[in-house]
Image (tube, rainbow, N blue to C red; front, top):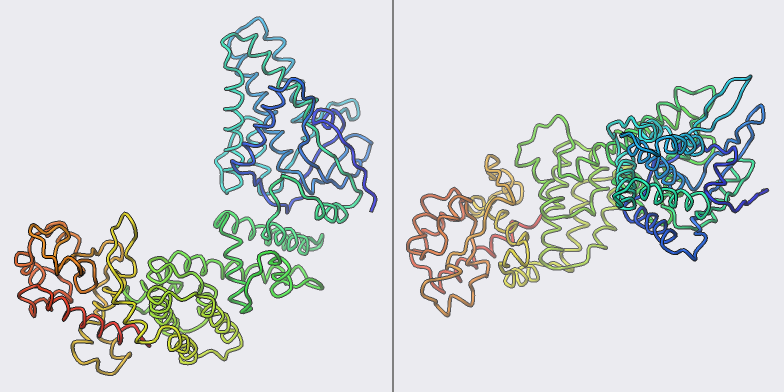
Length: 592
């Protein structure tokens, strides 16, 4: 591999006949605020430090070939597009600033017009003569996903952003505009021009890069892989996009390439920075393997796409499937039911939201993705098992989730080789419960569970406990007939309580008018906490139990509160008896 490194300033780079083309399937603009702030700070430091003559901004890795006729030199820009795009935006903002200064007649208007022409021909459009005619060639073209939007910015006709990279480009332009405004805060136009001249001199002479040139794109990619600089590194999604588009890029199958590119564009537009995580969920659900963050690209290519002899048609088929599956996975991550046509109740469909959003259990998302191949009723069973298991095993008994994750991945493999059954899955998780979250351990931990000041915690475990008991309270009170299947049959599916809106109420009040020392010590224990409709909670406040009693028994829709009929007086004995009832209910309700 022959490499020709050329250390030069940005001005020298564009004084030459260089034009730059980002490969059509390369990732979009990726610089965020921290990279942009560093870039601007570097420019400021050069301007302010008169003794410093230059600053190194990293490398540009290119595959270069000369155009027919010996005019511009076309550089396929494999690495360095982020910094070069940002320099181009800075030049564009500088031109825009000159235009703004020339809006009103002034003594420097001719000089400013010359500056606009000079900067435009150096940084925006390369001027050449062909057959005695003047033609202009754009100095920098980005990938298909960004180029039209980028051109709209540098040409002064901005479009509405359509994806994350567009938003980042627009944000960069705004930040660079603000930088120029701060730089030219002097009141007189001649002083402003002095500042702009100083900035242009810095760009032209003091901002240096290494222009590394190879003759082949493949060699340029190899060179890129061994270079580590301050640019925003390619992530695995970028590499997968580039690889699959390269595999689909056949001159005889242009329509297939366009379809695959459109899929990647749609994925980027719809999921943005979430895309790599969603692909990871898909990979684990499909293979039953854990994602290795440093090797995900290789894992995905090995197990999902394939490295060799994969025809463009097959690439499209695989990417089309990925697009459909990611749509379902995205729904799951948002706590949405993944079946578009459902025969289940709103309460049943809401369980996935309880699992993923309320209990914040994301480890089984690959399993849930794989389980969408099951009948809807079986998928629901899986969700219910996971919900109960996670609450008991992790929320209450505080076990690490690693052993459970191993079983989730095993279930993914079983799903994909058609050996999965819900009963076997329950059996695998029961083994963990027996060992580390037995009935004795579970009840012991529940006795220690306390209400927390909302400023210090979210009480999600306590809220879920009481909601779960509420859902199955009728079944428990009626003797737990038919076991777990009877429990499901007795749930009032019409009562869908919003997890965050149902409130927790102290029976013995938090700020009692007359303190009872015995009751105060159990103030925040589960026996002294109940559920209440939001409108009732605010009205009850810190009133006495005698006043609160009629609201709980007569006005609340919560079944748990009807049991206060058994406690006309609220004292230490009442609290203890209610605690035992709740613990007995929890032991059988949170099991499978």
